[in-house]
Length: 317
Ligand code: CA
Image (cartoon, rainbow, N blue to C red; front, side, top):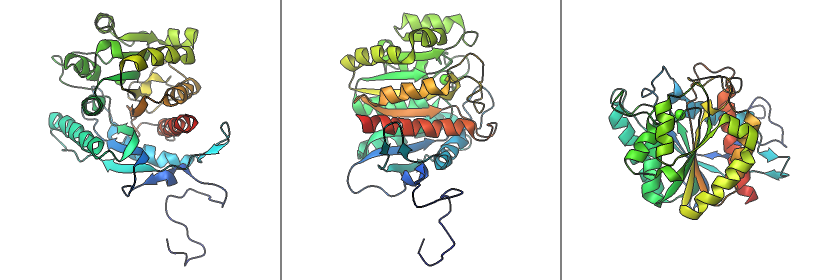
């Protein structure tokens, strides 16, 4: 805005802005960088593929907005986040053709990666089916990748019983040989939330499965340090897939599949911090937030905080 009006500020700058405070949404940039930037964001707004009712297609917008709830300053690191997040926008989708939409998401991510404009990628869903498209594009671009999946569920359902829904992305990635089972780590899997057939399938495929009890007893830092050191010897890049329903329902009321016995936000943030400080961790997707059932945008705020935590980890590298 032109400095002509003394009492007006640009829309979206928060309720109160003083000259000492920078809101995190100001890091979002719509223009493409002239030189390669650090962070890029792509919205993958598909949720009609969800098994249960879901408005997760609205989450790319609410997560961006939730950045305005935070400042760019980390007191723990005594540092300010200053690097821009290049906002590539949301993928155009058809209102009716879901299978075609999944392909469009894949093509869109492929196109962004091919431009090589940034180092690290944030993909905002959408339901968890979008991770199939994003990870397929990512793996094709970078070669062998490992995936660390935070989730209450295995997401290993077969596609014969309902098509490529949000219950199937990791089954499809394994059967299409996009990733191998031994390079997939599932963290936060919950009791009374999965069928035995999928747990068995995970173990048959060599997937590393950590239940919530494992997280409580072994600790997130110890689990992730072990898995990072194993994965980084085998793959060229590591991708984080964060299904927000890994969190306990108390922390993530906006998830379609809420439940008790999940992770708390401190554990999740510590995990993201540790992961992103590893040089091979270069992308994260955040999925399964339905802003239409959320309470005070709590779940979108967690997602925005995760993005900042990721950037903080990278700054500490
Ligand atoms: Ca999931």
